[in-house]
Image (cartoon, rainbow, N blue to C red):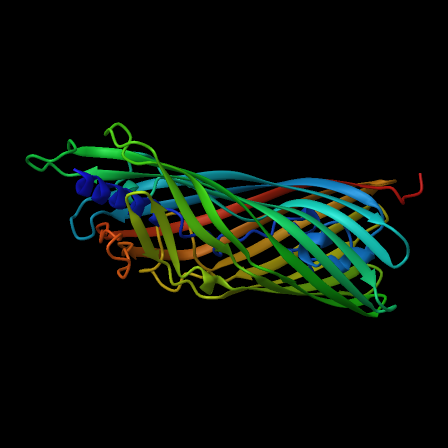
Length: 429
């Protein structure tokens, strides 16, 4: 009985592991600034038109004064999915996946003097969300997946010289994981569990911390370049795993070790003339840290290979300063997926290289600024051919369980709409 239960829980965990593996461009997010959204996040931290520099490059805080901002970006993803499960069985199904996720931000900054600024921010650097219909054929590979990583950060920036600014931040990071999958038990004479499809639920939470450092060099008043580094945070996320609800298996404690990867970001801005500002950005994420996903509980140990690669994001943007009140923006970006091929990709979320086209505007009146932004994301058509292999080498705890392979094809697009408000305490009434 104990051995059978262990095998069943391992099978359930293998499905849950499969459901956490992917997001567009991994599970990173750039949605810290709605003003930045309008230029595809080009020039993050060095443009100086809101208080979000703390999240991109803390050195850029010296460009701003004293003020606060709050914003929200709403991400809507749509995918047409055609799948065969098990692969080669002829059992095919088509479904639509529609997911809407809200990503908020809040920043406050105080300019101590002409050379020093301090700030505080709450933002979401990593996250994913996906939900398949519960009657879709691929539910053994995951139904619902949600990862939310929230940073609570404080930082200080100093103008070391008239041209060079340096910034240092520290963040406390909360990581929450909620996952749902199903386990299909075939009819077997004398089996402990009745045949059927059972649902598994997984709810975990943990805190970590890390550092964020940056530098910005102003060649002239209208030309500047910045570089920043955000460290990884290490987590041992803990919580409850409810395997095969209704089968009589009790809820058990579970742990999921996970590193949120480090990132390096380069940003540039050049004001061409009184009307035009140009910006550019590049960000590198060390996704090779996500080589395997491991979940442990009191009766089972499951380790699922990921084999992600390091990935880049590139963006170009333009601001048009129409008047003292109105600014208009546009931008284009390319986000490289860390998933190396269709055999390492999962059904958890639409994840492939993506192109981004953005538009935005700001309206300024006295101390208030209202920012609006929109982005369209296109992911070239791609496929999944995956059975989520359970890695060997952990005996005697490991239960060698593979899910049958699923073959699926995706046609995916996404939209991001953001609204933001800023208030400057330095503005003249």
